[in-house]
Image 1 (cartoon, rainbow, N blue to C red):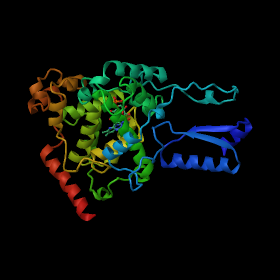
Image 2: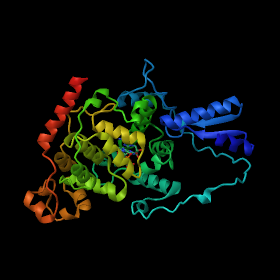
Image 3: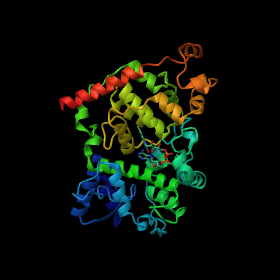
Image 4: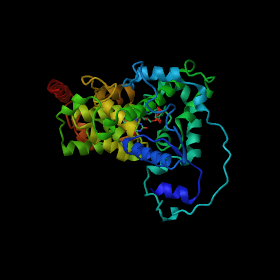
Length: 388
Ligand SMILES: Cc1cc2nc3c(=O)[nH]c(=O)nc-3n(C[C@H](O)[C@H](O)[C@H](O)COP(=O)(O)OP(=O)(O)OC[C@H]3O[C@@H](n4cnc5c(N)ncnc54)[C@H](O)[C@@H]3O)c2cc1C
Protein backbone atom coordinates (compact mmCIF):
# COMPACT_ATOMS: atom_id res chain seq x y z
CA UNK A 1 0.00 0.00 0.00
CA UNK A 2 1.35 3.40 -1.01
CA UNK A 3 0.71 5.12 2.30
CA UNK A 4 2.60 2.40 4.11
CA UNK A 5 5.67 2.59 1.83
CA UNK A 6 5.64 6.38 2.15
CA UNK A 7 5.51 6.09 5.94
CA UNK A 8 8.40 3.64 6.01
CA UNK A 9 10.50 5.47 3.45
CA UNK A 10 10.48 8.61 5.61
CA UNK A 11 10.93 6.81 8.87
CA UNK A 12 7.90 8.40 10.51
CA UNK A 13 6.92 7.29 13.99
CA UNK A 14 3.16 7.89 13.93
CA UNK A 15 0.48 8.34 11.30
CA UNK A 16 -2.15 10.96 12.19
CA UNK A 17 -5.44 11.25 10.36
CA UNK A 18 -8.98 12.58 10.67
CA UNK A 19 -11.94 10.21 10.57
CA UNK A 20 -14.09 10.48 7.47
CA UNK A 21 -17.66 9.45 6.76
CA UNK A 22 -19.00 7.16 4.09
CA UNK A 23 -18.76 3.47 3.29
CA UNK A 24 -15.76 3.51 0.96
CA UNK A 25 -13.79 6.04 2.96
CA UNK A 26 -14.41 4.08 6.12
CA UNK A 27 -13.35 0.74 4.68
CA UNK A 28 -10.17 2.36 3.31
CA UNK A 29 -9.33 3.67 6.81
CA UNK A 30 -10.09 0.30 8.43
CA UNK A 31 -7.68 -1.37 5.97
CA UNK A 32 -4.94 1.12 6.87
CA UNK A 33 -5.49 0.58 10.59
CA UNK A 34 -5.30 -3.20 10.15
CA UNK A 35 -2.10 -2.92 8.15
CA UNK A 36 -0.51 -0.67 10.77
CA UNK A 37 -1.69 -2.93 13.62
CA UNK A 38 -0.16 -5.93 11.89
CA UNK A 39 3.22 -4.21 11.63
CA UNK A 40 2.92 -2.67 15.10
CA UNK A 41 3.19 0.85 13.72
CA UNK A 42 1.41 3.56 15.54
CA UNK A 43 -1.39 5.77 14.30
CA UNK A 44 -3.73 8.28 15.90
CA UNK A 45 -7.13 9.30 14.59
CA UNK A 46 -9.25 12.37 15.30
CA UNK A 47 -12.92 13.25 14.97
CA UNK A 48 -12.82 16.69 13.43
CA UNK A 49 -16.03 16.92 11.40
CA UNK A 50 -18.45 16.60 14.32
CA UNK A 51 -18.23 16.91 18.11
CA UNK A 52 -18.86 13.32 19.20
CA UNK A 53 -17.54 10.06 17.81
CA UNK A 54 -19.85 9.11 14.91
CA UNK A 55 -22.58 6.74 16.08
CA UNK A 56 -21.87 7.37 19.77
CA UNK A 57 -25.07 9.35 20.50
CA UNK A 58 -27.53 6.51 21.15
CA UNK A 59 -30.97 5.80 22.58
CA UNK A 60 -31.57 4.01 25.90
CA UNK A 61 -31.96 0.81 23.84
CA UNK A 62 -28.48 1.48 22.45
CA UNK A 63 -29.79 2.24 18.97
CA UNK A 64 -28.82 5.15 16.72
CA UNK A 65 -31.37 7.97 16.62
CA UNK A 66 -33.44 8.49 13.51
CA UNK A 67 -35.45 11.49 14.74
CA UNK A 68 -33.81 14.88 15.20
CA UNK A 69 -35.42 16.23 18.42
CA UNK A 70 -34.46 13.34 20.75
CA UNK A 71 -31.04 13.21 19.06
CA UNK A 72 -30.54 16.89 19.87
CA UNK A 73 -31.71 16.38 23.46
CA UNK A 74 -29.14 13.63 23.97
CA UNK A 75 -26.47 15.65 22.17
CA UNK A 76 -27.09 18.55 24.55
CA UNK A 77 -27.10 16.26 27.60
CA UNK A 78 -23.69 14.91 26.60
CA UNK A 79 -22.27 18.30 25.68
CA UNK A 80 -19.26 19.41 27.63
CA UNK A 81 -17.26 22.55 26.97
CA UNK A 82 -14.05 20.47 26.98
CA UNK A 83 -15.17 19.06 23.63
CA UNK A 84 -14.35 22.50 22.24
CA UNK A 85 -10.80 22.52 23.52
CA UNK A 86 -9.31 23.58 20.21
CA UNK A 87 -7.20 26.52 21.22
CA UNK A 88 -4.22 24.47 22.34
CA UNK A 89 -1.06 25.68 20.62
CA UNK A 90 0.64 22.61 19.21
CA UNK A 91 4.41 22.84 18.92
CA UNK A 92 5.52 21.59 15.51
CA UNK A 93 7.92 18.66 15.59
CA UNK A 94 11.17 18.86 13.65
CA UNK A 95 10.41 19.62 10.03
CA UNK A 96 11.27 17.29 7.20
CA UNK A 97 11.42 18.40 3.63
CA UNK A 98 9.56 15.84 1.57
CA UNK A 99 9.76 15.39 -2.15
CA UNK A 100 6.39 16.11 -3.57
CA UNK A 101 4.76 15.92 -6.97
CA UNK A 102 2.41 18.79 -6.17
CA UNK A 103 3.62 20.83 -9.14
CA UNK A 104 2.27 18.18 -11.48
CA UNK A 105 -1.28 19.08 -10.48
CA UNK A 106 -3.16 21.70 -12.45
CA UNK A 107 -4.60 24.11 -9.90
CA UNK A 108 -5.81 26.62 -12.47
CA UNK A 109 -9.41 26.99 -11.47
CA UNK A 110 -11.90 27.37 -14.29
CA UNK A 111 -13.05 30.88 -14.97
CA UNK A 112 -16.15 30.44 -12.84
CA UNK A 113 -17.80 33.62 -11.59
CA UNK A 114 -19.39 31.61 -8.75
CA UNK A 115 -15.97 31.09 -7.16
CA UNK A 116 -14.98 34.76 -7.15
CA UNK A 117 -17.96 35.60 -4.93
CA UNK A 118 -16.52 33.71 -1.96
CA UNK A 119 -13.67 34.61 0.40
CA UNK A 120 -10.82 32.13 0.16
CA UNK A 121 -9.15 29.99 2.82
CA UNK A 122 -9.32 29.80 6.58
CA UNK A 123 -8.71 33.51 7.10
CA UNK A 124 -11.61 34.31 4.76
CA UNK A 125 -13.84 31.86 6.60
CA UNK A 126 -12.94 33.36 9.98
CA UNK A 127 -13.75 36.82 8.66
CA UNK A 128 -17.22 35.67 7.54
CA UNK A 129 -17.84 33.96 10.88
CA UNK A 130 -16.71 37.02 12.84
CA UNK A 131 -18.93 39.33 10.82
CA UNK A 132 -21.95 37.05 11.24
CA UNK A 133 -21.43 36.71 14.99
CA UNK A 134 -20.94 40.44 15.41
CA UNK A 135 -23.84 41.64 13.28
CA UNK A 136 -26.40 38.91 12.69
CA UNK A 137 -26.43 35.92 15.02
CA UNK A 138 -28.51 37.57 17.73
CA UNK A 139 -31.36 38.09 15.26
CA UNK A 140 -30.88 34.71 13.56
CA UNK A 141 -34.06 33.19 15.03
CA UNK A 142 -36.09 36.00 13.44
CA UNK A 143 -34.22 36.59 10.18
CA UNK A 144 -33.14 33.13 9.11
CA UNK A 145 -36.19 32.32 6.95
CA UNK A 146 -36.26 35.47 4.89
CA UNK A 147 -34.01 34.98 1.84
CA UNK A 148 -33.59 38.66 0.96
CA UNK A 149 -32.40 39.63 4.46
CA UNK A 150 -29.25 37.45 4.32
CA UNK A 151 -29.78 36.63 7.99
CA UNK A 152 -27.81 33.36 7.90
CA UNK A 153 -24.05 32.89 8.17
CA UNK A 154 -23.16 31.54 4.68
CA UNK A 155 -20.49 29.52 6.45
CA UNK A 156 -21.64 26.23 4.86
CA UNK A 157 -18.98 25.99 2.10
CA UNK A 158 -16.20 26.30 4.68
CA UNK A 159 -17.75 23.63 6.90
CA UNK A 160 -18.40 21.35 3.95
CA UNK A 161 -14.80 21.62 2.74
CA UNK A 162 -13.25 21.32 6.19
CA UNK A 163 -11.79 24.85 6.08
CA UNK A 164 -13.50 25.66 9.36
CA UNK A 165 -14.79 23.21 11.98
CA UNK A 166 -18.18 23.06 13.65
CA UNK A 167 -16.25 23.12 16.96
CA UNK A 168 -14.84 26.54 16.05
CA UNK A 169 -18.30 27.85 15.08
CA UNK A 170 -19.94 26.62 18.29
CA UNK A 171 -17.08 27.86 20.48
CA UNK A 172 -17.09 31.37 19.00
CA UNK A 173 -20.90 31.57 19.29
CA UNK A 174 -20.86 30.37 22.90
CA UNK A 175 -18.27 32.98 23.83
CA UNK A 176 -21.07 35.50 23.16
CA UNK A 177 -23.45 33.54 25.41
CA UNK A 178 -21.37 33.09 28.62
CA UNK A 179 -20.40 29.62 27.34
CA UNK A 180 -23.99 28.49 28.07
CA UNK A 181 -25.48 26.10 25.49
CA UNK A 182 -28.81 25.57 27.29
CA UNK A 183 -30.16 29.09 27.75
CA UNK A 184 -29.47 32.67 26.79
CA UNK A 185 -29.72 34.47 23.47
CA UNK A 186 -32.34 32.82 21.23
CA UNK A 187 -30.52 33.63 18.01
CA UNK A 188 -27.29 32.00 19.18
CA UNK A 189 -29.08 28.89 20.47
CA UNK A 190 -31.07 28.52 17.24
CA UNK A 191 -27.91 28.82 15.16
CA UNK A 192 -26.22 26.09 17.19
CA UNK A 193 -29.36 23.96 16.65
CA UNK A 194 -28.75 24.15 12.91
CA UNK A 195 -25.19 22.96 13.35
CA UNK A 196 -26.61 20.04 15.34
CA UNK A 197 -28.77 19.20 12.27
CA UNK A 198 -25.51 18.83 10.38
CA UNK A 199 -24.21 16.49 13.11
CA UNK A 200 -27.50 14.54 12.98
CA UNK A 201 -27.25 13.89 9.24
CA UNK A 202 -23.61 12.82 9.54
CA UNK A 203 -24.66 10.33 12.21
CA UNK A 204 -27.44 9.04 9.94
CA UNK A 205 -24.90 8.51 7.19
CA UNK A 206 -22.65 6.64 9.61
CA UNK A 207 -25.33 4.46 11.22
CA UNK A 208 -27.53 3.79 8.17
CA UNK A 209 -25.13 3.09 5.26
CA UNK A 210 -28.07 2.51 2.90
CA UNK A 211 -28.48 6.28 2.50
CA UNK A 212 -25.02 6.40 0.90
CA UNK A 213 -26.09 3.77 -1.60
CA UNK A 214 -28.90 5.69 -3.25
CA UNK A 215 -31.52 4.10 -1.00
CA UNK A 216 -34.36 5.93 0.73
CA UNK A 217 -34.48 5.79 4.52
CA UNK A 218 -38.21 4.90 4.41
CA UNK A 219 -38.10 1.68 2.44
CA UNK A 220 -41.72 1.76 1.23
CA UNK A 221 -40.90 4.85 -0.84
CA UNK A 222 -38.80 2.64 -3.14
CA UNK A 223 -42.18 1.65 -4.63
CA UNK A 224 -43.05 5.16 -5.76
CA UNK A 225 -43.69 5.42 -9.45
CA UNK A 226 -41.70 8.61 -10.16
CA UNK A 227 -42.40 10.53 -13.35
CA UNK A 228 -39.71 11.80 -15.72
CA UNK A 229 -40.22 14.64 -18.17
CA UNK A 230 -37.07 16.06 -19.75
CA UNK A 231 -38.57 19.49 -20.52
CA UNK A 232 -39.87 19.88 -16.95
CA UNK A 233 -36.49 18.81 -15.57
CA UNK A 234 -34.69 21.37 -17.74
CA UNK A 235 -37.19 24.10 -16.78
CA UNK A 236 -36.58 23.38 -13.08
CA UNK A 237 -32.78 23.38 -13.49
CA UNK A 238 -32.74 26.61 -15.50
CA UNK A 239 -35.23 28.56 -13.38
CA UNK A 240 -37.96 28.56 -16.06
CA UNK A 241 -40.84 26.70 -14.34
CA UNK A 242 -43.13 29.73 -14.35
CA UNK A 243 -43.23 29.77 -10.52
CA UNK A 244 -41.25 32.92 -9.65
CA UNK A 245 -39.99 31.85 -6.20
CA UNK A 246 -38.80 28.48 -7.55
CA UNK A 247 -37.12 30.12 -10.53
CA UNK A 248 -35.46 32.84 -8.43
CA UNK A 249 -34.07 30.20 -6.06
CA UNK A 250 -32.71 28.01 -8.86
CA UNK A 251 -31.13 31.03 -10.54
CA UNK A 252 -29.55 32.01 -7.22
CA UNK A 253 -27.91 28.57 -7.04
CA UNK A 254 -26.84 28.63 -10.70
CA UNK A 255 -25.27 32.09 -10.29
CA UNK A 256 -23.74 31.83 -6.81
CA UNK A 257 -23.34 28.12 -6.06
CA UNK A 258 -25.44 28.63 -2.93
CA UNK A 259 -29.15 28.74 -2.08
CA UNK A 260 -31.00 29.88 1.03
CA UNK A 261 -32.18 26.99 3.25
CA UNK A 262 -35.90 27.86 3.12
CA UNK A 263 -35.74 27.85 -0.67
CA UNK A 264 -33.82 24.57 -0.80
CA UNK A 265 -36.81 22.99 0.96
CA UNK A 266 -39.30 24.74 -1.33
CA UNK A 267 -37.61 23.78 -4.63
CA UNK A 268 -36.88 20.22 -3.46
CA UNK A 269 -40.48 19.70 -2.41
CA UNK A 270 -41.76 21.16 -5.68
CA UNK A 271 -39.44 18.81 -7.60
CA UNK A 272 -40.35 15.64 -5.71
CA UNK A 273 -44.04 16.31 -5.05
CA UNK A 274 -45.55 18.64 -7.66
CA UNK A 275 -43.28 17.42 -10.46
CA UNK A 276 -43.15 13.94 -8.89
CA UNK A 277 -39.54 13.46 -10.02
CA UNK A 278 -37.12 11.12 -8.27
CA UNK A 279 -35.33 12.93 -5.41
CA UNK A 280 -32.02 11.35 -6.48
CA UNK A 281 -32.02 13.46 -9.68
CA UNK A 282 -32.49 16.67 -7.72
CA UNK A 283 -29.94 15.60 -5.11
CA UNK A 284 -27.40 15.01 -7.89
CA UNK A 285 -28.06 18.38 -9.54
CA UNK A 286 -27.58 20.13 -6.19
CA UNK A 287 -24.28 18.32 -5.59
CA UNK A 288 -23.07 19.42 -9.03
CA UNK A 289 -24.14 23.03 -8.49
CA UNK A 290 -23.54 23.90 -4.83
CA UNK A 291 -20.27 25.24 -3.49
CA UNK A 292 -21.31 23.87 -0.09
CA UNK A 293 -22.28 20.47 -1.61
CA UNK A 294 -22.04 18.04 1.27
CA UNK A 295 -23.25 14.47 0.88
CA UNK A 296 -24.90 13.93 4.26
CA UNK A 297 -26.63 17.33 4.59
CA UNK A 298 -27.74 17.30 0.96
CA UNK A 299 -29.03 13.75 1.13
CA UNK A 300 -30.76 14.51 4.44
CA UNK A 301 -32.35 17.69 3.06
CA UNK A 302 -33.55 15.98 -0.12
CA UNK A 303 -34.92 12.95 1.68
CA UNK A 304 -36.65 15.22 4.21
CA UNK A 305 -38.29 17.24 1.44
CA UNK A 306 -39.25 14.12 -0.54
CA UNK A 307 -40.74 12.47 2.59
CA UNK A 308 -38.47 9.47 2.03
CA UNK A 309 -36.04 10.18 4.86
CA UNK A 310 -35.56 10.26 8.61
CA UNK A 311 -37.85 12.60 10.46
CA UNK A 312 -39.23 13.52 7.05
CA UNK A 313 -42.11 15.85 6.29
CA UNK A 314 -45.29 13.68 6.09
CA UNK A 315 -45.97 13.00 2.39
CA UNK A 316 -49.31 14.81 2.41
CA UNK A 317 -47.75 18.01 3.79
CA UNK A 318 -46.78 19.73 0.57
CA UNK A 319 -45.56 23.33 0.53
CA UNK A 320 -47.51 25.57 -1.81
CA UNK A 321 -44.75 27.60 -3.54
CA UNK A 322 -47.01 30.63 -3.96
CA UNK A 323 -47.92 30.72 -0.26
CA UNK A 324 -44.24 30.22 0.63
CA UNK A 325 -43.37 33.09 -1.69
CA UNK A 326 -45.92 35.42 -0.09
CA UNK A 327 -44.83 34.42 3.42
CA UNK A 328 -41.07 34.64 2.99
CA UNK A 329 -40.62 37.16 0.16
CA UNK A 330 -43.60 39.37 0.89
CA UNK A 331 -42.61 42.28 -1.35
CA UNK A 332 -41.05 40.09 -4.02
CA UNK A 333 -37.61 41.66 -3.54
CA UNK A 334 -35.82 38.33 -3.76
CA UNK A 335 -37.72 37.43 -6.93
CA UNK A 336 -36.83 40.81 -8.48
CA UNK A 337 -33.16 40.33 -7.64
CA UNK A 338 -32.86 37.04 -9.52
CA UNK A 339 -35.55 37.38 -12.22
CA UNK A 340 -34.88 40.72 -13.91
CA UNK A 341 -37.81 40.09 -16.31
CA UNK A 342 -40.14 40.61 -13.33
CA UNK A 343 -38.36 43.54 -11.69
CA UNK A 344 -41.07 46.10 -12.44
CA UNK A 345 -44.00 44.03 -11.20
CA UNK A 346 -46.02 45.04 -8.18
CA UNK A 347 -45.93 42.86 -5.04
CA UNK A 348 -49.62 42.09 -5.57
CA UNK A 349 -48.91 40.14 -8.80
CA UNK A 350 -45.27 39.14 -8.63
CA UNK A 351 -45.83 35.82 -6.85
CA UNK A 352 -48.20 34.61 -9.58
CA UNK A 353 -48.10 36.94 -12.61
CA UNK A 354 -51.18 36.92 -14.90
CA UNK A 355 -50.85 35.06 -18.18
CA UNK A 356 -50.77 38.11 -20.51
CA UNK A 357 -48.03 39.78 -18.45
CA UNK A 358 -45.90 36.63 -18.63
CA UNK A 359 -46.16 36.60 -22.43
CA UNK A 360 -45.31 40.28 -22.59
CA UNK A 361 -42.23 39.87 -20.36
CA UNK A 362 -41.09 36.62 -21.96
CA UNK A 363 -41.54 34.83 -18.64
CA UNK A 364 -42.88 31.23 -18.96
CA UNK A 365 -46.38 30.03 -18.16
CA UNK A 366 -46.48 27.59 -15.18
CA UNK A 367 -45.29 24.09 -16.16
CA UNK A 368 -47.98 22.46 -14.01
CA UNK A 369 -51.19 22.90 -12.09
CA UNK A 370 -50.49 23.05 -8.35
CA UNK A 371 -53.75 21.50 -7.19
CA UNK A 372 -53.74 18.57 -9.62
CA UNK A 373 -50.06 17.83 -9.12
CA UNK A 374 -50.49 17.85 -5.35
CA UNK A 375 -53.24 15.23 -5.55
CA UNK A 376 -51.16 13.17 -8.00
CA UNK A 377 -48.27 13.10 -5.49
CA UNK A 378 -50.47 12.08 -2.57
CA UNK A 379 -51.92 9.28 -4.70
CA UNK A 380 -48.43 8.05 -5.71
CA UNK A 381 -47.27 7.90 -2.08
CA UNK A 382 -50.50 6.20 -0.99
CA UNK A 383 -50.12 3.56 -3.71
CA UNK A 384 -46.50 2.94 -2.72
CA UNK A 385 -47.58 2.44 0.89
CA UNK A 386 -50.37 0.04 -0.13
CA UNK A 387 -47.97 -2.15 -2.14
CA UNK A 388 -45.43 -2.35 0.71
C1 LIG B 1 -32.73 20.02 -0.22
C2 LIG B 1 -31.63 20.51 0.69
C3 LIG B 1 -30.30 20.35 0.31
C4 LIG B 1 -29.26 20.80 1.15
N1 LIG B 1 -27.96 20.61 0.75
C5 LIG B 1 -26.95 20.99 1.57
C6 LIG B 1 -25.59 20.79 1.19
O1 LIG B 1 -25.27 20.22 0.13
N2 LIG B 1 -24.62 21.25 2.04
C7 LIG B 1 -24.91 21.86 3.22
O2 LIG B 1 -23.99 22.26 3.95
N3 LIG B 1 -26.19 22.03 3.61
C8 LIG B 1 -27.22 21.63 2.83
N4 LIG B 1 -28.51 21.85 3.22
C9 LIG B 1 -28.78 22.43 4.55
C10 LIG B 1 -28.89 23.97 4.58
O3 LIG B 1 -29.75 24.40 3.58
C11 LIG B 1 -27.54 24.67 4.41
O4 LIG B 1 -26.61 24.12 5.30
C12 LIG B 1 -27.66 26.17 4.71
O5 LIG B 1 -28.58 26.77 3.84
C13 LIG B 1 -26.30 26.83 4.56
O6 LIG B 1 -26.38 28.21 4.74
P1 LIG B 1 -25.69 28.93 5.98
O7 LIG B 1 -24.28 28.51 6.11
O8 LIG B 1 -25.98 30.38 5.83
O9 LIG B 1 -26.53 28.32 7.18
P2 LIG B 1 -26.81 28.82 8.67
O10 LIG B 1 -28.29 28.99 8.77
O11 LIG B 1 -25.97 29.96 9.05
O12 LIG B 1 -26.46 27.54 9.56
C14 LIG B 1 -25.13 27.28 10.05
C15 LIG B 1 -24.64 25.93 9.59
O13 LIG B 1 -25.47 24.89 10.11
C16 LIG B 1 -25.57 23.82 9.16
N5 LIG B 1 -26.98 23.68 8.75
C17 LIG B 1 -27.92 24.64 8.69
N6 LIG B 1 -29.11 24.11 8.33
C18 LIG B 1 -28.89 22.79 8.12
C19 LIG B 1 -29.72 21.69 7.72
N7 LIG B 1 -31.03 21.84 7.46
N8 LIG B 1 -29.16 20.48 7.58
C20 LIG B 1 -27.84 20.28 7.85
N9 LIG B 1 -27.01 21.28 8.24
C21 LIG B 1 -27.52 22.50 8.38
C22 LIG B 1 -24.74 24.22 7.95
O14 LIG B 1 -23.46 23.63 8.07
C23 LIG B 1 -24.68 25.74 8.08
O15 LIG B 1 -23.55 26.30 7.46
C24 LIG B 1 -29.57 21.40 2.39
C25 LIG B 1 -30.92 21.56 2.77
C26 LIG B 1 -31.93 21.12 1.93
C27 LIG B 1 -33.36 21.31 2.35
